Image (cartoon, rainbow, N blue to C red; front, side, top):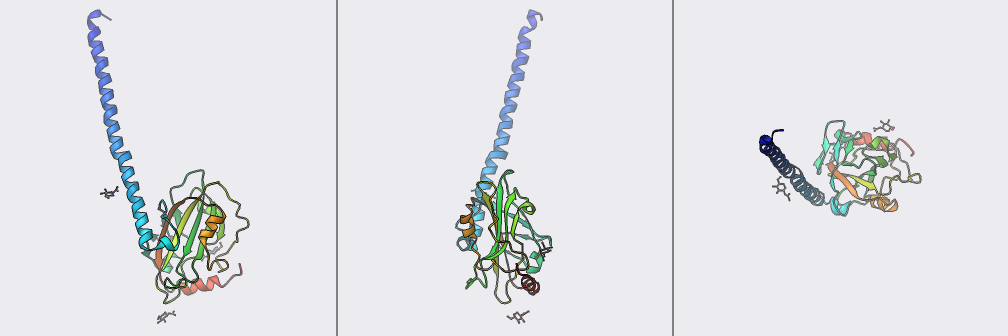
Length: 236
Ligand SMILES: *[C@@H]1O[C@H](CO)[C@@H](O)[C@H](O)[C@H]1NC(C)=O
Ligand SMILES: *[C@@H]1O[C@H](CO)[C@@H](O)[C@H](O)[C@H]1NC(C)=O
Ligand SMILES: *[C@@H]1O[C@H](CO)[C@@H](O)[C@H](O)[C@H]1NC(C)=O
């Protein structure tokens, strides 16, 4: 390289370095504006909204003491979703829904669905009814978990008003749990379902954080007699 061209080569290098630095700063700015800051705001809002909705419908304190971390996404084969206490008809929620939440890939979860309003919300002497219980769910693969209480839909008696149907997902902090001593209940039986206490199960098996939850409400429709007949058709 000729001595005369040295300064311009240095200038070029310096310019490239400056442009790279400027790009880095700009990209940093963009990522913190659209990423970190927004995420923090959204998650604050989410927590607030989950807390508000669970408290407003008195799921706190009737079923749980504190709000879940996030809303679980509950989707039925009929196309409806259960969310924030919306009213759905028993006919729309008769088949097992898909339940989704933010899962750690290596963690196991336990999923409950309970009705605290049996036989009605004013005098819930059968609180809770256990509608569904699955443990040892790897990630969100409910079908691969230990199915303890087979799913049954909503069967609120005629004239008993709106019942709340609450889904709760707890993390299993110590990984897989031996549920072999817990009862197995088919979708043809009420055994172990009435006066169910999910909080006791949570304590007994040392379940951890309530990572997700959601709920809908339903009152009697003409699917209910079908469900009641089904629940009387088996012995276990
Ligand atoms: C919640 O979201 C709204 C807009 O959706 C926003 O105006 C508000 O600042 C957020 N609140 C918090 C605590 O992030
Ligand atoms: C439901 O209750 C209403 C009144 O409360 C009554 O008119 C109706 O016949 C009942 N339906 C059934 C299927 O029992
Ligand atoms: C009840 O459970 C059986 C066995 O898992 C299943 O084949 C059937 O579809 C279920 N019935 C309803 C109405 O969910």
